[in-house]
Amino acid sequence: MLCHWTTRLVPALEAFDSTQLTALADAGLGTLSFSQLLMVLALPLALLLAAFESWHFRGTDKFEIRDSLASVVMGAGYVLLAEGFVVIAVVVPLFHWLYQFRLMTQTITPLSFLLLFLLVDLCFYLFHLAAHRIRFLWGVHEVHHASEHFNFTVAFRQSVLYAFVGAYVFFIPAVLIGFSPEWVLGTLAANLLFQLLTHTQWVGRLPTAVEWLFNTPSNHRVHHGRNPRYIDRNMGGVLMIWDHLFGTYVAEDPDDPPDYGVVSQINRPPSHNPVVLTFREYGRIIADMARPGPLGQRLKHLWGPPEWVRPSIASGAGDVHGVLPS
Image 1 (cartoon, rainbow, N blue to C red):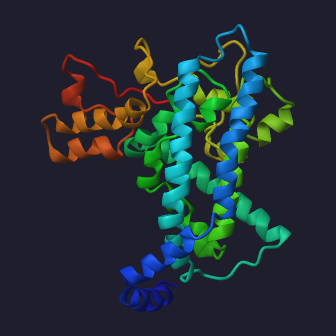
Image 2: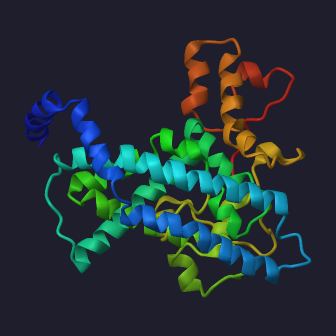
Image 3: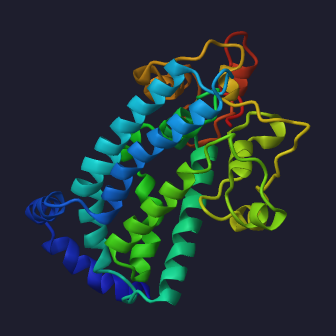
């Protein structure tokens, strides 16, 4: 298998140059793919749902105008830059280039699409888990969890930096197995669109079988909670089967309602500035890495879990912010 890939990869690398990448990018920029269209349509859908939801919860604290505006502004930037320009200009050409090294060619049938759906959902679970357990990735994902409210606008509280941290690397296996980039990205976009519907307190717990199998509003409320028992739980995109398999599933407990937000912001005033929200965690990472100490430990602030604190820092007085993520 390795020899087979090597004989195909080496000539391709020798022949590949920047003009090919430019041509691929130009081709991708010519039209919006199905996946980009889904993401563009998702923002007005989220706003429409949020309008109905805010009316339903009028007179309560389920919405806060500055919080929702920050989420919408960040969502628009995310759709235009991360899911728009960068996907078309970089991810699509890269996936097409990698597609020539596929192990086989997958023709889309009902059975093969089911396989693709499961594979993309598993890849999302692995990415989501990594985004909670690797601090460099948590830097972009923390933005989504920073809201201390939970409503449809929070679904679009995403960082534009997703475009630059390699999130799409997690979905390359689906391309190498033989699914075309358009089908992989389209299935991922549909997966993300489904997840939009889980960001609400409007829907209570559904029947037990539904809660066990699917990512529901109840399951996702748990995921956004910073309660100790809810941290790093319910990572699935559409299905909860991966959480059951890997031990990350927890059901919502009516006696322990989710406390939304990130642990590092407990007892701190929330920010509604999109720039602050985008770069806050990376500023903390840089500050931690800048403190004196062995190089290996300083670099661990990038790849270690978000709650990891160097012994030399933990033993000193001061602001230890790198506590558990939510």
